[in-house]
Amino acid sequence: MRQVDLDSGRIEVRQADITTLQVDAIVTAANAQLVGGGGVDGAVHQAAGPRLLDACRKIGGCETGSAVITMGYDLQDRGVQYVIHAVGPIWRGGEQNEEALLAEAYAKSLELADTHECQSVAFPSISTGVYGFPVERAAPIAIAEFRKFLSAGPTHLRRIVASLFDTRSLAAFEQALDRQASDP
Ligand code: APR
Image 1 (tube, protein in one colour):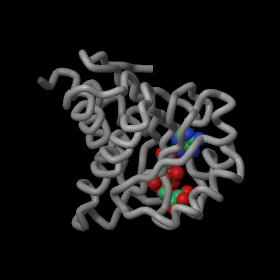
Image 2 (cartoon, rainbow, N blue to C red; image 1 turned 90 degrees about the vertical axis):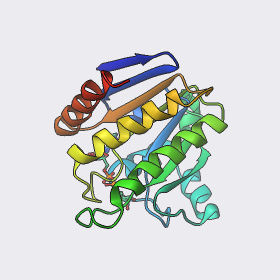
Image 3 (cartoon, rainbow, N blue to C red; image 1 turned 180 degrees about the horizontal axis):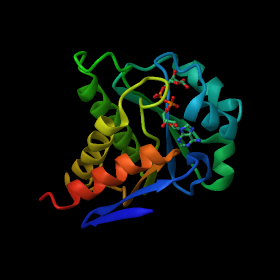
Image 4 (cartoon, helix red, strand yellow; image 1 turned 120 degrees about the vertical axis):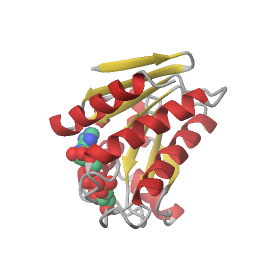
């Protein structure tokens, strides 16, 4: 685990199955139809139970580069109050505004966690699995959004966790955290 403490809160980078973490909100990497899937979304739906999919169906969908929030359902037994469904972009070579859309998916998720008074939130590496976004390009975008949000002013969030599943993603996020640690 690696972490950086800012005045306003802590950013942690760790290797973990996101469904095992003790945080107020878990972010999942969803699709625009919010119909569930494999990868981290499959794991989160499995852990939260079928009521999560029912809630997603009621919402109906979410634009790419945005996010929606639901209750945590079965995850609430373990203290996870909310699931935030973030829709990152599908990587199409980098010329289709993918980087900005990824940043917006992170920013919207952070905003939702904050407006729901979460003190802690965990993120997977959005878009870097099935959606093919290169993790070495995605990691600095994620870390920059975390830093920007914590630095921007009063927020309920005190702890932002990047929960990486594999060692390559972990290394990319650790490197991004280290590189940006010395930024003003
Ligand atoms: N905890 C943390 N990270 C996980 C977990 C888990 N339990 N399971 C998978 N991951 C990692 C993957 O290894 C990858 O690094 O999450 C990252 C994101 O991969 P995907 O889940 O494939 O997400 P994404 O690339 O955004 O694709 C979204 O996949 O499952 C569908 O419904 C989803 O259509 C959507 C698409």
